Structures are given as C-alpha cells and as structure tokens.
Image (cartoon, rainbow, N blue to C red; front, side, top):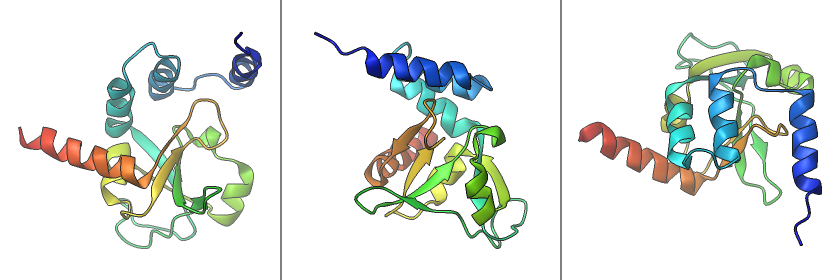
Length: 147
C-alpha cells in the first residue's frame, strides 16, 4: 500500500506557492517524472539563477563574492541557489543581502570540489546536487562542449 500523504503535502505546498518561471516548470516536470533528468539539468545549466553574497560583488561575481553556504545534516557545505528572487527566505537575506546572477552552469563550474548545490532550499520545486554529482555534471558538460 502506498502512502499518499507525502504527495498530498507536496501538492499543498506547491499550490501555496506555484511555478514562477519556465525553469521551475522544467524542474517540476522532472520531479514528477514527466521528463528525463537530463532535460531539467540542461535547463538549469543554461538558465540564470541567483546566489546570495555577504558582500557586494562585481557584475560577474569575479570580485568580492562571499557566498551564503548552508550545510547538510552530515555537515557537507551546500551553495543555495534560487530560481527566482521570490524564493529567497527573508532570514537568508539578513545574512547575505547581495544577489549574484549567473547561469546554473557558471555556478556549477565555479563551485569548489567539496561543495554541493541546493536549489530552492525548503521549497518543493527544488533539488540538491552533491559534490560528486556536480563533478559528474562538470565532466559531462565539458565533454559535450568539446564534441
């Protein structure tokens, strides 16, 4: 017998704060299994997303980027990224009030090897990529750019 309470909770949370843009729709389609994982990962890599910085940065985040970093229960550092500025919790902005906008691919390429990414933490339209998953995406993305 399947417990549908998790699905009902997901649907209720989603109804309270629905899709804001095409990237989120692609992520939602992936979460629901309506598209292959590579489809929404590709959308994420090519679409602008937002990170938070404790300090002001240059336009391309090359100078002064001091990111907000979260950690998993196991202590792994995770860079939170957001698909829409409306997804950023107010308490995060108290700590890191500056935003940096780059494509998901630029963030993936620039994150340190020991850091993962969490997209829209706490929201049903979100996902996590461990440091190992990011390494695989970097490797696969680099290979696709060469061929």
